[in-house]
Structure formats: C-alpha cells, structure tokens
Image 1 (cartoon, rainbow, N blue to C red):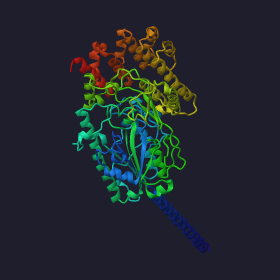
Image 2 (spheres, rainbow, N blue to C red):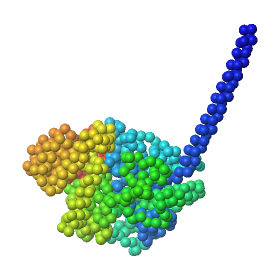
Image 3 (cartoon, helix red, strand yellow):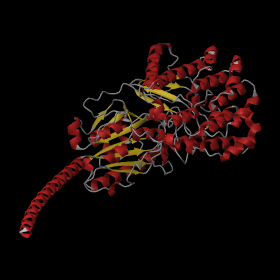
Image 4 (spheres, helix red, strand yellow):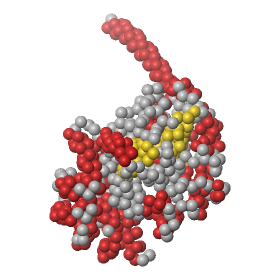
Length: 637
C-alpha cells in the first residue's frame, strides 16, 4: 500500500514538476523574445542615429574658394559647402592647437577646464612634468569627453590621428584610427585630423605675382613664396577631403552622416597662430547634414549663416544631432536648436605657448573686437623656439633690424604692447588702427572691457593665476577645474573675487600706481603678491624694495622668483642667486619661470652660465629650450 501511495505521490509530483517546468520554459521563451525585441529596437535606434564626422584641419584660415579665395581651387570643399551650410563668423576659443583641441573635445572653454596653457597637464612628451602632479591632470570624473559620450551611446569612435590634449583622459577614448572597423549597422563618430597649413613644403602652382599679402607683412620674396606654399596646402587638403567623402559614399554612409569641417586655428604666421587677431582665430566652418536632420532643424543646404559661432558649439550641436543629451558642464551651444539664441560676443584667450608665457583675452561682436594684453610689459615677439625657427619669422626680424618695415609691419617688434586694443572690424578688417586711445570710442571701450571681465568671472577663467601657482592649486584640489568650479563652496566666491583682484593688480601696474601695488604685495593670495612683485620690478618702484625683500622669502616659490627678478631690475644683482636656486624646483613650472626671468634680464645672468647650461638637461622640455637659447647666446654660437 505504501508502495502504491508512494507511486501515486511520485506520479503527482512528476506532473507538478512537468507543469512547473513547462511554465518556466514558457516564461523563459517570453523573456527571450522580449529581450530580442528590446535588443532589436535598440539596434534600430542605433542604426537610425546619424553618423558624425569631424574633419579638423591644422594651421589654416578661410583661404578657400567658397570663402572667396581666387588664387587656388578647392572643388571638394566648395561642393561640401554647396551641399551644406557655410558659417562666415566661426571662431576658435584658443589660437593654438592643444588648447583649441582640449576645448573642442570637451565642449568647454579651455580656461574653465584648466587646459589653457599649450602643452600642459601631460605625463610625458612635450610639457610632461613629474608624477606627483599626474592625478590632478586627469579630467574630473564628473566630466565625460565627447568620445566617451558617443562611445557610451553605442557609437564606434575613431580618431585619425591626433589628440594633443592638455589633460589625461580617464579612459581609452577611441576604438581605433579607422571608422570602417564598425559593424555595418553601427553609427560612427569619426574624427579626421588633416595636416592642412603644416604642409607648406609642396611645390606651389600659385602665381606669385597675383598673390595679395596682408598689409601687415612685408612684401618680400620669402614671405610671398611661403604664402603661396600655404595656399597650396589647401589644395592638398581638398584632395584629402575628397577621399574622406568618397570612402563614406562607397560604404553607403554618406547620406546619413553629419559632417563638420573646420580648422583648429588660423595660419601659423607672425600675427596668426597664437594670437587673437582675426588671422589667428577666424576659421572656416562648413556643416553638411542628412536630409532628415534638415527637416528636424528647419535648415537648408546651400545656405550661409552669419552669426557668431565658437568651435566649442560643435560639441553640443553634434550631441544634439545624434539625439544625445548635452551635459550641463558643456559650455558650447547647439546652433541648430529651434531655441538657439545667437551669441552676442565671442570669448577667446591665449595663454602660455611652449616656453613663451603670455596672457591675452578678447571679446568680439559683429562690429568691434576688444583685446586685453595682461602682459603688456613684454613684446608680441617674445623669444619662441617654435616661431623663431620659421624662415618667415627670421625674415621679418631681419627686415625690422634693417629698418625696412613700415610702421604697421614693425608694430609686433615693439618692446611693449598696449594694454588694450580696440578694432572696428567693418572699417578696419586687418586690425591696423587701435582705437583704444580714441576719445570717440571711450564708451565702447569701457563697455567691452566690462563685458570681458564679466565673462572671465562667470566662466571661471583661471588664466591670471601664474601657472606654477596653479599647478599646486590643482594638485591640492584634485584638478584645476575642481579648484575653480562653481560648487557653492565659499572658496568659489573667493575665486571670483580673486579674478577681479588680479585684474586690479595688473591694471595698477600698468598705470604705475605704486601705493596700490604695495598694498597688493601684502595680500594673503600668492597670485596677487606675484603680480604685485612683477609690476614693482617692471616699473622700477624704488620704494618697493622693502616689500620685495620680504617677498624674496615668501612661502610660494613663484613669488620668490618674481620678487628676486624685480630687485635685480632695481639694481640688486645679488638676487640673481635666488632665481638660479629655483631652476631645479620640484615644481618644474617654477624652474621654467626662473629661467625665463633670467632671460628677460638680458646678460646679467651670464655669470651663472654654468648653472644655466646644466638646465639643458632639465626634465622639462620648455626649461631646456630657454637654457639652450641662453647657452647658445653666451657661448657665441
């Protein structure tokens, strides 16, 4: 009986288990089907997203057919413009490659992110420093760069083949160099980096006699020949663009691809690259959109836009076209958005370029440009291994020394610059006539100055903080950006106040207000003490000796260097030893500033030539450059 009962129970249990298994199997099939549906829908969504292609060209201004250049033909780019939208007032926010590219790939102003100094915040190569600072060079984790945002959205992300960023990314940004590694139904975000104006070695077919040089350059055979080679580089670039478009067409991707073409800054020349004149910051921008995007944005191909565009806007616009949210830290604007409000002003800046320290800010509207030279005590043509190595620069220097340049052409070689420049771009497109001292333009000057200062504060521009000091601020805060980020912390109010105070300190120096500088020399802020020391020395304020003697023992190394240099300017050559003692400071930027201070003092440092020659082996590339230049000079090479 027990056996029968057990058998019956076993039979019932088997049926229950069978039913349960059948139900579970059904549930699994339903789940699998649902998962397949979700994956299928995600695949369709990904496949429906447009491809995004960036064609970024180096060292070139808008000297192409569709922008009115007649000396060369650029059919591929002209056709792209005819099929797309041409922007007449597009600008970069930095006139040098690494700062421009750092802003480009983050969608943020370089002076907000802390990537404003050219070749900075890297672990090795040009600008590489030492390990204690590396963590602070990493992009703050709350910030995702454009490649990361596209990669996380399922895009195949490539770069062929230049980064040159002033930060250390938190992840591997790119899948590779070639976009054709993507699955056929996978959207791509592909960057092409073209050599552009750096290809000035090709034989030119341009008629030299028909070239029209800007009036601020000498009409000399070397200058004329170089300009022809530069124009020829656009012809070569046009061939590269044609190949990119042909490959996309052959792969069946072209019609679903949004293409952005622009340059990382203007032509590399005396007034171009690295400076805020139109030649340095005005760039071409052409955007070709898929038909579906035209319908969504209400735009049309074959049209022209004349509103001001900053190149960081390309980041926000690319994300929006792809249907991706634009993070709140992105400062660029979607210029195809139905709610887009055209920018009233361009905000632009130049900072240290290699071993050449400078701080320039600018604001520009449709009619006028205001430039603020925060280091007006040094010339436009400071020593620069990069620029001085160019034949065109050497030619201009020679012509200047021979007295063969006119007043306009000789202006960059003046020992000092005006603190402010104001140009009427509609009536003076070459920016030849500075209106900053014109009584007829006092109100405009005051207004644009105020707009610039407000932007510097609102965008949390950290550029006036001397770089050696900023290095340590970033290290302590985790990153330079975090040190200045508007987080509601009391320190952030301090930072905004600091920006205005640094402006006031530099302005007091320019106006030779000794008593004001002496008050600023007592500030608790090392950056303020630094600029006070600089200007007490530049102005040779004799009553500043006691304050400077105190600052020579300041707790901040950069302040000690600035104070010692100021005292040398006042005749106390014994302070040279203080500067030399800082050449090997653990903060490598301090060492570079020390060498730069020695170079600015002329031949006074020659008696320390052995110490300076040893700095040719410095760990820091830009310290080596200054040391080599001084060693060659003093050895008669």
